[in-house]
Image 1 (cartoon, rainbow, N blue to C red):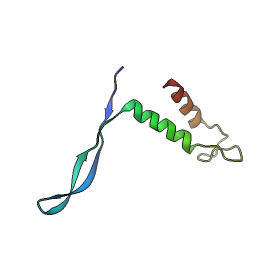
Image 2: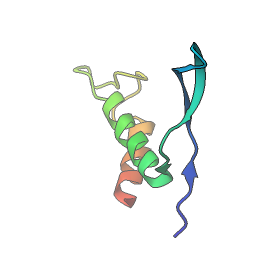
Image 3: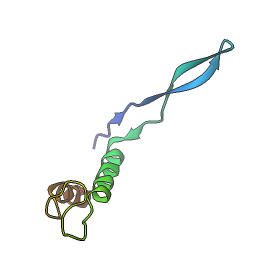
Length: 77
């Protein structure tokens, strides 16, 4: 199984030559499966059911398509 890493960087203010400058600081890499699982959980959290039986986020009949896809992906883990 190949695990790919997604490279991320962020800008932070760090003193450099007695001046404040924005410097690119590397962020530790997270494996792609962990990122995918995080997105699946976020999707399940955001697309919750309302008391009317519709999705809070997209307004479709719950469970909406994003929730169905997220459940399938979660079962794959």
